[in-house]
Length: 277
Image (cartoon, rainbow, N blue to C red; front, top):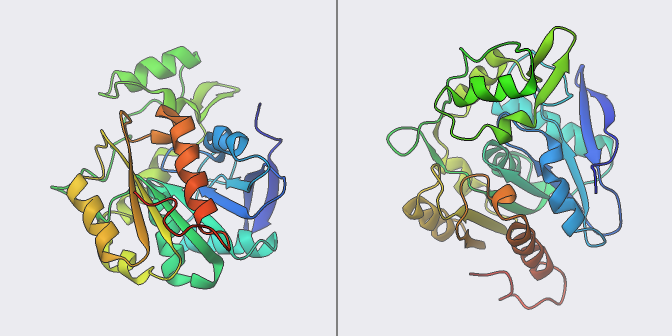
């Protein structure tokens, strides 16, 4: 099923695009990673239809939302809080992948009244060398190419084995094919999230959390994932086998099952052991 027609809101002086998959059940706010867009969560929304209302925004500088401005975690969090308040959907379960995972637990730290439950998908709190390389240099990626396939080839020629994820943000402009995101914006955004986020993770304690790790993650090591689960109260850890960093596209059924199991386990009267691994 294709994603619904994007909606738009003007918040904090800029235009934001978001997908509202509708339906009954509690709200699940889904935050994408760098270079992504809300539509990446369409398969999850389909799998959870009838159980959750999935809301998937394009974060600032991504997708159909406005580019430019300041790219810091504080700005992203303020945008997200403004969206939830504008749509009167507080509190919500908040899921984030990669950068979106960091924004999700930072939101729980700064605005605990907005977050009912937390799902962090393959994001580390040690977002710095030598644990990981937090910044993908895209400064020499082409602004325009004559075709979508040429855009893929240009990205993959820069040591990206598979550009499929990035091509979700490809767009046909009047002067050729390019990305919806601006290179300078996302270089600034990546830099703003680099560093040790451990203290913020610990301060996010309050809402129950599920930490999902991809077996073949290049970002979240087994040791750091174990520390994150052990150090933060009411945090379950679950690993998705045979998946890389983009676990929600590598195993959409397993990803949806893990999310659904966790959310179901937080319902009144549910077995508290459900969703734990």
